[in-house]
Image (cartoon, rainbow, N blue to C red):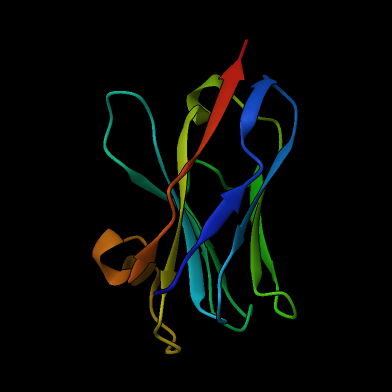
Length: 125
C-alpha cells in the first residue's frame, strides 16, 4: 500500500512563504491539488517522475514552484507571496505512470493513483 505523507502546512500571514513536502515510497509523478472552503478541489502543480517537467496552474504561476529530491523521493511545493485565496487543504497525489503527457493530463484528478490525507494552509490578512 502506497502512502503519501504531507507536511508543512500552517497558519501564515499574507505575503509570506511556505513550503509543503510530500514523501512517497517510490519515484512517482507527483502533484499538488487544493480545496478551498466551499469549493471543488483544483490542480495546483505537478512534476514528472524524473523531475524533468513541472506544470503549474495559471493561478499560481510566478508565485509557486514545484521540485523534488529524487534521492529521498520527496516532492516540494514552494509557495511565495501567499494570498488569502491560497487558503485551503493541500493534497499530494501520485501517478504510477512514467510517461510524459500534455498539461491537460496532469490537471485531472482521476489520473492519479494515490492521495495523501491533506495538509491545511491558512493565509490570514
